[in-house]
Length: 84
Image (cartoon, rainbow, N blue to C red; front, side, top):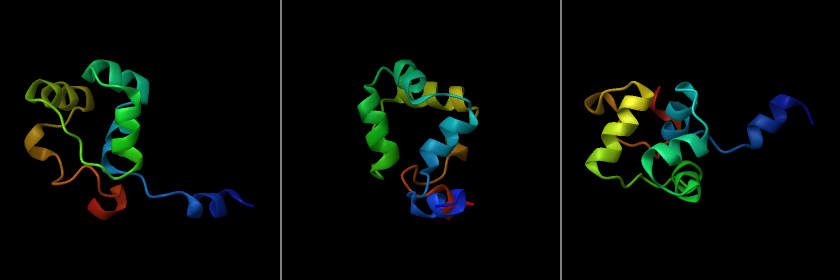
């Protein structure tokens, strides 16, 4: 199986995952900064669940990824390709 064929079998990347990766953060790092379990972050990224965070967690998240809250897409659970 070629690399392109493998990519076709992967689920589309969520906006949340794309933002995290663009910021150069691992799931573990972001989870620690937000004070959540890594399993929670994985569920948000992989199962299409919308993040549920406190105002402080949203502020931290936006600061870490370098995107103002008002500039975030309507949904972070949607595939990144859908917002491009």
